[in-house]
Structures are given as structure tokens and as C-alpha cells.
Length: 131
Image (cartoon, one colour):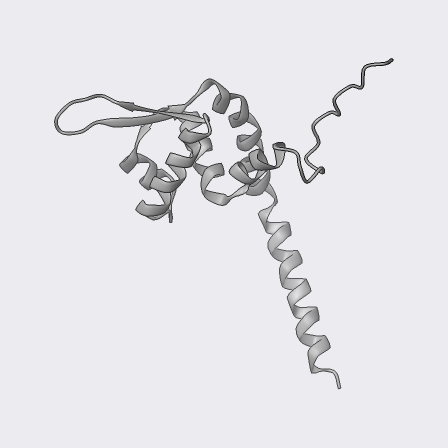
């Protein structure tokens, strides 16, 4: 009898754990934090300054989630005053390049996205005015 092979993982399969990986990194804050840490290890305050707009609570929650999932490491230097640094893990390093490419794409293409949104919104307003 032939041995049945295990199906390949697919993010399109609702039971595939790979979906969790996408959910983990798909948010704005994880993507920006991982990209920032690709530059160098950083302390909490330095990350807050680098990733504009993130609240202290959201940064802390996101760092914990990324650490829990093995994408970053937290190094407590056990000194006074407290000195804690975050850096990409080896696994996080494998992801950073793709995220940086996505960052560059967004920086390069945001004018076209803005223009398309404005055209769409203007067309929607015009269609609502018609009887």
C-alpha cells in the first residue's frame, strides 16, 4: 500500500499554521519594528523614536508578541539603571530583507496609491450626487 504523503503547507488552507505567521507580521507595527531592528539592536526608547506614532503600550505588546514567536530576542543587561535591548533573532533576520523591500516599495509607490484613492473617492462623491 502506498504511503500517503502529507500535503504541502498553504496559507490558503484555513487549517494551516502558516496563516498565523502572516497574521503576526501583517500589521503595521510588527513590520516597522522588525525593519527598524534590522538596522541595529535598539532599546525601547530608541524604538519609540524610530517608529513614529507607536504608543508605549502598543510597542511593548508588539515586542512581547515578536519575542514569543521567536522573531526577536530581548537582552537584559542586568544593570542599574535598567538596560534592555531588542534585536532580531536568526529567524527574524530571515524575514527582515523581505520587509525592507516592502518598505521601499511603499516609499516609492505611495504617490500612485494616494492618487488612485483620490480618484476613486472623487468618483464616489460624483455618483452619490446624481439622482
